[in-house]
Structures are given as C-alpha cells and as structure tokens.
Image: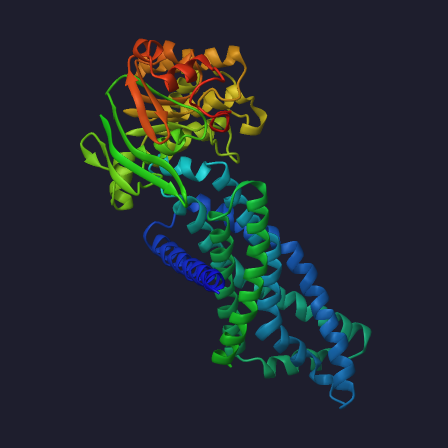
Length: 256
Length: 251
C-alpha cells in the first residue's frame, strides 16, 4: 500500500515539477524576447527555417484541403440548392479554423520536431554548456530567436494557407463542378468579416508561441544520448499537436 | 585562486563529491587525477558554476560562486575558458566561426581584428587552412585543438580542461599535452586539467591532486604524488589490479 502511495506521490511531484519548469521556461523566454531579443541575423535565420522552408508543405496541404472542402461542400450544399454558398463555406472553414490549425500542425511536424532535435543534440553534446562557460545566455541564441520567428511566421503561413485553400476550393467548385465564379467570390466577400480574419491570425500567433515553447523546452531538457533526443522529439510533436487542438477549442470559445 | 571547501554533491542516491577540499594555485597547471566515474568532470562543472553543490563553498579570486544571479555568475565566468572532453564545438558553425564566436558576442573588435585574432589563435594551436571546415570534417585531435583555440581566444585568466586527451592516439596525446604547456607559457593562465593519463600528466602539471571517493586524497607536486606511499595513489599510478581500488571504479 505504502509503495503504491509512494509511486503516486512520485508521479504527482514529477508532474508538478515539470509544470513548474514549463512555466519558468516560457516566462524566461518572454523576458528574454523583451530584454535581449538576439541579433537580427539569428532571428532571420530562424524565420527562414520556420517560415520560408515550410512554404512548400503549406502550399501542398492548403491546396488539397481547399479542394476537399470544395468537393464535400458542393455535394452537401447541392442537397439544399445552395451551391452558390460554396465560397462562403470554404472561406469561413479555412479562415476561422482549418488555416490556423492545419498550418500549425504542419509546422509542428516540420520545424517543431527539428527545433527539439537541434537543441537536444546541442544539450547532449555539451554545446549549451559551452555557451554557458563563455558567459553567454543560451536563451539569447537558441530560444529567443525561435520564439520571435515562430510568432511572426505562423500568422503569415496561415494567411498563405487561407488564400491557397480558397483557390483550391475554387478550382474544384468552379472549374470542375460548375459553380458560378461570381457567386463563389461575391458570397465569400459578403460573409467573411474582419473578426474572422482577426481570430484566425490571433490563433496562429498563439500556435507559434506553443510550437516554439514546447519545441525548445523539450530539446533544452532532453534526456541522455540519442535515445533521449529521440524521445524528446516524439514528445515534443505529440505534446505540441495536442496543446494546439486543446488551445484552439478554448480560443474559439472566447473569440466566437 | 580557486578554493573549494567541504563540497558535497549527490545525484539521487549516488554521492559524487563528499566533503571535497581543494585549492588551485594561481598561474600554474593543476592536474586532478583519479579513476573514471569519481566525479572529476563534476568537480570542473562546480568550479565554473554549471553545477551547484549541495553543501560547501566555492570561491574564485575570493568571490563565492554560490547563489548568484546569472549576470553575477557570468561576470565571474568571463575569467574562464573551458575545453570540453569532446571539444563541444558548435557543429553548425565552421572552425573560424567557432573560434570567432566569443569575440563577436563579447567584444567590439572590428571584423579584421577578429579575423586576425582567430587566425593567431588557430596558429598557436598548430592549425592552418582549416578555417572553413566544419567540426564533423575534423579528426578528434583537430577538434581538441580548435576547442583549445576557442578557449584561449578571449585570453582568460583560468582554463579548465576536461580530459583533453581521452580517445586520442599516443602521438596526438603527446602533441596536445605539449600544446597545453606551450599555450600556458604563452598566455600564462591558471589551468585545471582533469585527466587519467598517467604518467604523461606529471610532465606538464606543476601541482597534482588525487580524487577518490569524492575527496582529495592527496595533493602536491608531481614528485610528491609519484613517490606517495598511499596504497590507493600507488595502485592508481602503477595501474595495478591489486589494491584497494575495485575494478568497477576503473575503466
């Protein structure tokens, strides 16, 4: 009995300690973002890595997401004789929900995992210790630029996702299934309001923070050896993806 | 002057440092020898503030290293350079960028001055025409040389060496030892070398301390240690299997 209680206690203490470290990590990261954001070249390098290099995968997923929305939306709306509303359905789904969430999940898989692996390898090969011994703060070089880059890149990637997705829906709905092109864009323009766009951008901004936070944290505290880095990378992707979906629900309930 | 007094450190149930006392004299090379797994690297990490002791005090030039804010700790760390066991070079940077990094981040030197200083440091460690190579293109000995160049480039007052010759062949080993002695003569820093290279370490160290079971068992000049009658010291420097050091504590 006492052994079981001890085990529960140990798990509980471990969980609380992990939460404390996570909290400390993001507070210190924001302190550094404000106080010492790092050299612009470090931030630009990360912008290129997180943003520019994710463009291909964002284009690809956005196009097919828009196309499948066009296809599904057309056959659903056709039952009610409302094919003209296809543009609105595609645009609102993308701008409010799918654009921010799917672009964030794609960046998590592509860049979030790489952030964890990079920092994790630096941890186990003592490169982070080397920075410390040079009297340099590792956050300034490894964490802060990634936070700033992810906060800036995610909204931009989300905007690109939305536009490409809308044209994917247009391709299927208008070009393949014969929806009136004027209705597709006119109805969209009537239905989409600034608040929809604002909420999508706010979501992707906060998803950028989550990707940088969990990606950097898991790498910074990676365990021992190659196995430690591999476990940290897996945990990083899973935890980031779950947090994005959970946070999305709460944010949607506030922003709606 | 580095002074550690009654330092204790445990990792979970494992006691690594157990009331360790050590004074490192200024301007000379101090070697810390002892079997593997006895906490020699842990000792170095305490000296530079990468680890904090559970109990005891650590002073560098009369200033305590304990309970400091990052900015205060960094001010003391500016006195240090460190050569890690695996060199710990930044693997996404070239040799030149690795050595130039502390100069770019901590000084206001011009690009030309940085270039000149880096090339001088690389030449001092016997490296030429490798500036554009990346760490994974270098041999183990070359990595250690680049690590040494990076450690000396800011002209620190103290340099810590964590097993600088582990995993190198005998010729490169001798070359690295020679290099440490030459750079010490050139720059005049205080050096702490963690090593179990016996007997080579006695040729370059001015002061030797034997670490065993978390304590400094004996310290003195290389001759004092070589002539020691302590059974643990005798067994360690002779490499004998018979004696108080269990096999499990040695490599």
